[in-house]
Image (tube, one colour):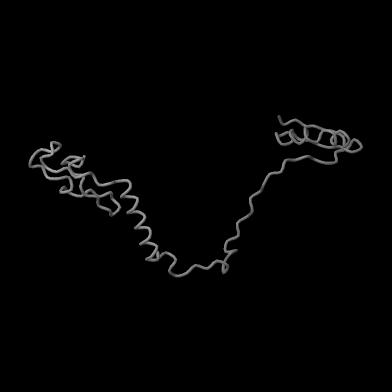
Length: 135
């Protein structure tokens, strides 16, 4: 747009909303009084405040052990993690040899190697389900 719009004070009072929209979209709106430019209507543009280094110096304190996690919190999180792992990865049922579902001589499910989920929790008993190569 970028048009120059000049209006007198009386007209500006009655059309303030429309003039504000035009100013917001880039038009230069000048309000006149007695035929002479009196006011410029400009959109409000936030200007970022200049950064003052060290303005909070001495106001923020951090303990020397801020990066050490309390042991009871670690134990609590570990218990929650293990409970979720049990819910997400329940143990498969044991199928005894000779039941018709496993061949005679096959070991039961829970005799296979453990599978680790990468977070330190090993889940045993899945070797027969995923195959001998860990697929």
